[in-house]
Length: 290
Image (cartoon, rainbow, N blue to C red; front, side, top):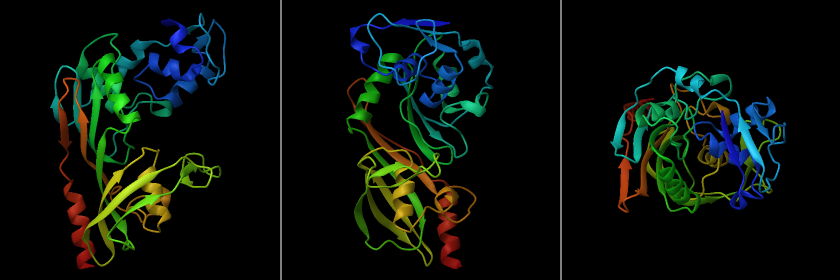
């Protein structure tokens, strides 16, 4: 059980946001499930996730953290580790958070808890990659580091570079796609370009070309969910393997988080790189010989 009394600093903040901060190993979507299931209460009663908190409010959860420990151990490739951070090369197919119907599935979050070895210490996921996306992820091993790194993401001080293989050929060898993204009301688990969406910008450059596809270097200026996938699909050049956005079927989604540049807690600006999976080169070679 966890309990947190709301002070002036959290007054006016949404209930679900503070609850998620209490449980950093969980996504806000799963925290919603717990709130709706009366497992996270406000002042002893069920409350809506969007409720604006007041000083003196008390959030209580009867969520058994022991259940978290029942998730099987998992081993992931480590690119860098110190007392504050853990940087991994996430394989495609691994989820960032164990949540919802995937509650007992090993994830990056469960791996971080496994590696940090600090019972009760708030650590966890700083940013997320989709299950189908591979590549660099930086994770925090304590609460101070989590806050320090997340502030860099929210203030756009992190430089992220992705590699993708898309269908067809882009109109320009390099450009910025500047189109707002909103949730698709017809398919709530997906997103689309829409006038009422949030501002979203993606830089791209072509780095290799074959008869049927191109390999791109992508740099998201903003960090919307599915941003790269939506922007490219809207250009009529979906990422190969991205069947969610009308891409052709492939062995996997051809999207890889290649590098991440960030300032570590000690103040050093560092770039972490994850080698491009061999299947990307194979896909390009197959397209050339097709």
